[in-house]
Length: 289
Length: 339
Image (tube, rainbow over the protein chains, first blue to last red):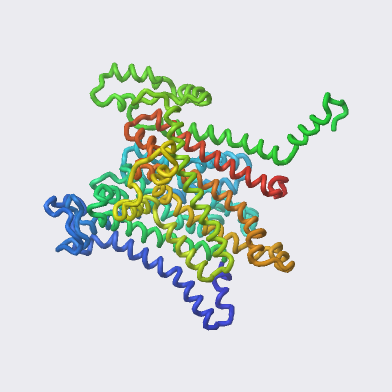
């Protein structure tokens, strides 16, 4: 990978080359900075800025326009501060997306690595089971699961994580198959290293970049699906804020106060776009293109 | 062919050639492989739905029901049987087209599913036609001169479009075209029997909301594949060396190869796409299968939920199967198993 990273500097440093390496750096810096900003605003913002509580607003202050005193983005029909709801909603969206990805990465990554490393019957069994899961329109079953478990943040995480496992497992298995016969892996085995140690110390660090890149691409998707669940009333239960249930709430008064839908939509779009751009850049670098 | 002459040797030769042909063998194998996947999907659905905490009969009857009433309904629905027995009973009915009766309306589910599948099918079909119909020419234009203006614009549009959730786009479309401009209806569905124009008019916004992200995805994928083909493949060099014009190389040579990849991606996508109709049908109040599923989830009608989920899953599996088969039939390398 180091070779790939260094490649552009090997070419003689003409002006065009230099500007291109700048562009390449920007591809990482811009979405990274946006994400830092979003994460910082959502998690640190409510602590340090004078933002009102996202729930329990005064009904007398409902539907205030933007830039009202004390309410930068105005208030919703229940008198809650829109900015506060966006920030707290972002907290739960990001928490869910990170938790789902971590669970999926750990469970899927382990399953895939085991499957690819062991081969044989274990491999066939695991892969057939995953085929079934992959065939599933996951949003559909997630809806059913979310409803049956009852809407809550933990249940949303569990339902979404369950369906992120097969994709991680596939990536992990493919990477493992590629690495299995590499000299360093064979050497580790010949040294008499125990199987779990080979997996953990030799294989895992090498398949991790691919899994993390995939996870980055998945962040946007999970945030969108979480929004869909909340939109349908099966995710974060109101009055607790989430981008999805804010959009659903705003839909009711779409013709009168469309701005209430616009804010959470913009937040959702910017976050997902930043994750997608970062994921794409990482993927392009790892695949050496 | 064989030493003992059958009654009509010509017929038997045709038959054996058909059965022995790589395409037919491959199709047979793939179809057989889809069966356990569909079975697995139905078992998984059954299992997940049976994990529901609390008693299904109690939930249907409400909190005021007496213990005797609950037990009577449980017996009627067979809920007192072990899960394996219930699954086998359900499966026995399902293969004969009987998916049980709705707990709320008492009507057979399969009848309801049929009419709703038509609506969802039309919506998805329309979205597919729009997205592919636009993605192919745009990707070709972009790949004709990579990194030029058209390419750059199409890339920016597609990565942006991929980051817009379809429900966000749907609301945006409603806001602009139904609330501000009142060109299209915000909600409602006009069946095909009341005229094609009115029907398409009512489906325009929902189909666009589904089609746009798909269009972005396909454009991105096809453009990437075309550029790869044009830059790296020997057959492209050969075609150019023969003096074939650049458009012809792109269309007849590179696109032909790239279309295989597109077919696979389209097949894989259909499963997710069907899932996304749930939310779009909800926003536009379309009487499709997604709306039925959501209603059933909210009324805890688990028989209908089960039927809907299994139907969704079967469609996804079949779409993959068809994509797989098309791929195999079109690409001789797969057909003859050399790759």
